[in-house]
Amino acid sequence: MTEIEIKDVAIIIGGAITAFSTLCAVLITSHFNLKLAKTNIDAQTQEKNRDRKIQKVEDMYLLFEKWETNFSTIYIMHLRCYFGKLDYQSVIDLTKDSTMLAPGDFQKFNMLMNVHFPEIISEYKKVDYARSIIVPFLSDPQKSKLNPKDFAALQENFEAVCVTFKMHISQLINEDPA
Image (cartoon, rainbow, N blue to C red; front, top):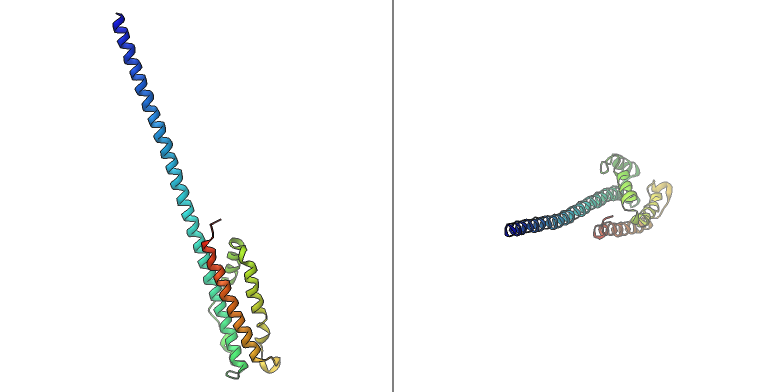
């Protein structure tokens, strides 16, 4: 009978070793599957964040471009008035019905910049300053008596500052998403 008992014990030990090995294999496989799933989720999250950031940068760029074009159209009309190509009332009539910017576009641009990309605010201040020194020229040249050559130089400066600012916006895409 001892032989049967030793056989039974050997079978039980063999079964236990097989069960233990199977459980270890399942645990190891589950562990690696969990790591792989976490890695995939992290990669998808990073990709989603990058796509979202790209979309915000593109929206901000487009809104700035629309604002710049709108302002440029206005000052070019005034510049034509300073050079005697248009009278002041014609300039007012041509610029009062501008449809380039939809209501809230500039506020959306500011929101995107202030909330998501505050690192470019100092660069935008340069654009705003360049705009502010053009504003006195957006008046009747007969009353203001300002020099059209100064106006043209300030307009060129504004354009250059805007180009630089758009480069800063574009560079935001290459930065790591927050």
